Every structure is written in C-alpha cells, then in structure tokens.
Image (cartoon, rainbow, N blue to C red; front, side):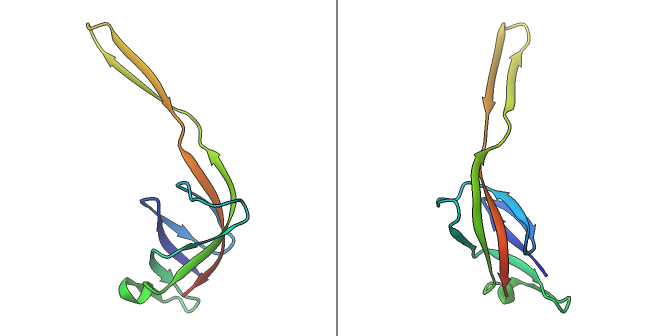
Amino acid sequence: MYAVIEAGGKQLKVAPGDVIQVETIPGDVGAEVEFGRVLAVMNDSNELVTGAAASGARVKGTIKSHGRSDKVIVFKFKRKKQYKRTIGHRQNYTEVAVNEILA
C-alpha cells in the first residue's frame, strides 16, 4: 500500500515505514502530523484510487527531526563588467516517519 501526497509544493510517494524530508512543519520532535492533501492511494487489492475518492484519505506520521540541507552555492557573473557575486543557501526541512495510511 502506498499513497501520493502533496507537502510543501512537492508530490511524494510514501508507504508505511518510509522516512521523508518535507518543507519545515511546525511542531516538536515526536509530535504526530497528518497530511490531508492525498492525491492518490494504491489499496492492498491493487486498486488505484484518485480524485474525489482519495480526498478522504489521510497519511499520519511522526516528526523525527528538523534540520538544514547542504549548502547550494549561487555564483553570478557578468563578463567585462567586473561583477561577481557569490551567495549560498541552505534549505530548512523536517524529517517525518510515515506511520500509516488511512484510506
């Protein structure tokens, strides 16, 4: 059984027992979270449920940790103009362990 959820503007395929990284979710480590935006669910009987039929499905998980991903270097350069600019970015994330899919 698996589900396709939307979290932080991204679509993720999750199954019970998976550990996923999503955009930062407010909450303490060990707190329960619920993803209500479920796009599709594959049942145990190999039926793919989508659209309005999947709107009642929920995915529950537990927050494992909060963190920051690796630094991405952004380098801007314009030739012949003596313009160089280097900046970096580290994106925040929340690590969630998927517990169950309620379809």
